[in-house]
Image (cartoon, rainbow, N blue to C red; front, side, top):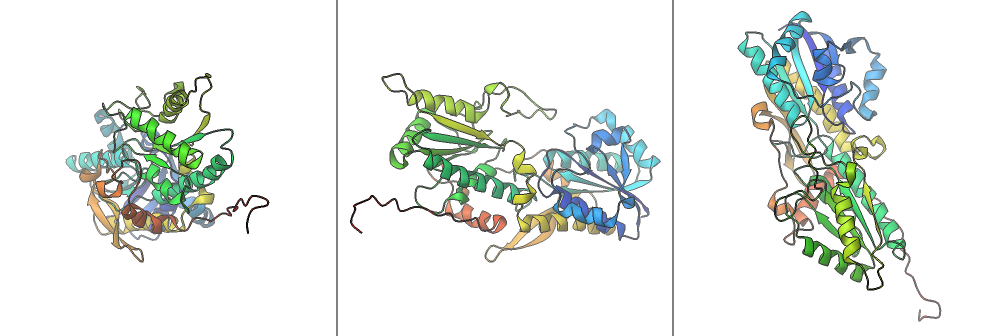
Length: 408
């Protein structure tokens, strides 16, 4: 099937999303059936306005450099495609003789390409649509992990490791620190901070994920116990954590175009800020003084930190892009490329596929066996799962703190 190809990026970026873009462009340019290689400027929202660029005319070195370029080079969007947009989509596809569509994104993006592919098929327009996975949340169904997650996991683990050293050394000033990660429905990223630990007492001490409801009194008790035991408390929470009654800790009521709750820090509604206030007040002394602490909300920084990228993540993202083109060239359509772990130690993976309909608008929570029985930590199985993806973290010097005049 001769025709042009178009590529789009949607949703939040990842550190490695442009590596997937590079893989698609390079493979598409080498494909005899693909004549032109185009890009959607600002995703499907830009496509509806015919903001289309010619990626085939970019310098080869520019495309190659995408493999280590952060953010979304094509520009992204969070536009929910409406049913009445579909005739316009088909009109533009026909106008530019586009027969191959590759979208890089998460579950909402997979829903978009599934609908476009099905609509075109229903109208008799032959189109091959392939999804390439992307999300730092690691909540895409049907894949061992998503490109972007290992690098984001490395980012938050390093952040908590280094902030933990700061918190330990500043315990006379601040008695606790709360670090919030993204993750609306799944705790994969918050859980990844467990890799920061090298020694007993290292940060983080408590990890709260959306898969486990949080009891307010138990939270306070656990945090005060950590302060008593270690001199400070390092607490990590996913943005989507909920109370025992099912209400979000963040108290957020804002929703995005896909009807997902927004967990940003606007209006003081983020989970970290709420937990900070609860713990500060809970530690109040008869004198009126309160516990002091700080909160850290990185938001989109783990999505674009190329300096902390996982080398495995960069390579797998690139190969997912190339594989998408190979599948389309073979006549495959309506699927997402997936990563299948074939061996845990030493790590090895292969690339498979999963139908878009099984991925679209679904989420993959952390399985029970990856969460510790106490509900505020991870299991050894999870560390075995994540370790090969993130790579080795640094070790830092720890003083013995030997008092003067003491026995040697």
